[in-house]
Amino acid sequence: MRVVLAEDLFLLRDGLVRLLEAYDFEVVAAVESGPELSRALAELKPDVAVVDVRLPPSFTDEGLQCALAARRATPGLPVLVLSQHVEQLYAQELLADGSGGVGYLLKDRVFDADQFVDAVRRVAGGGTAMDPQVISQLLSRRSQDAPMARLTPREREVIELMAEGRSNAAIAERLVVTERAVAKHTSNIFAKLGLAPSDDDNRRVLAVLAYLDRG
Image (cartoon, rainbow, N blue to C red; front, side, top):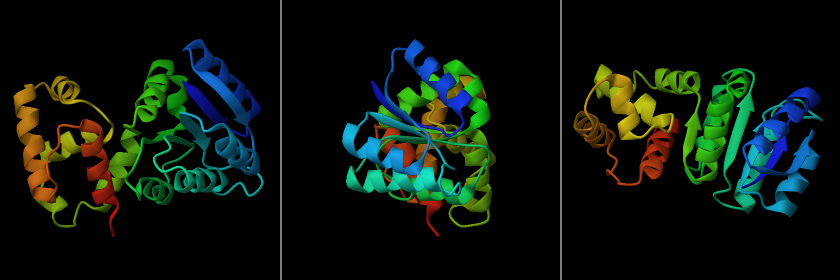
């Protein structure tokens, strides 16, 4: 699996390269600035991009803007964003088109090798890997808006875990309920959100996230 990595801090960038290569990823480019990232994404067409939000030269949202531009040029390009903090605006921009694999992790998560590698693979496969803190803030922002306000506390727990990219089996294990119960909650969630249920878990999660992002 071919990866383009963008991170301006040398030690973290080098550590991520070593980690990814240890898990049989091919890091085709490891860059430190926005212009380098744009060129790498355009020329190398990776299977997934792992991108820091803040990159030189602006140190604002350079990394994210490069990734968004690449997704416009290559619709569905899988992008996993790394950030030091939960920044809702960046998460919303990433989720806005609702297509292709997307992820948003806090940098603290990269110190858990298995969790980070699983997130990269999930995003590369077209799924989602959203940090629980990001999901919690996005849901809180919409918590008073209909139809989100109609969800029960249990349904909110289920949708948060769905948004992290977890399967029905994983949700059932986390909540200590049956998969049948999770399927029922999921059906209720889609009915309340006006979204048609789907057998494709990744498409289902992306649809929910796209809905949550609407103004």
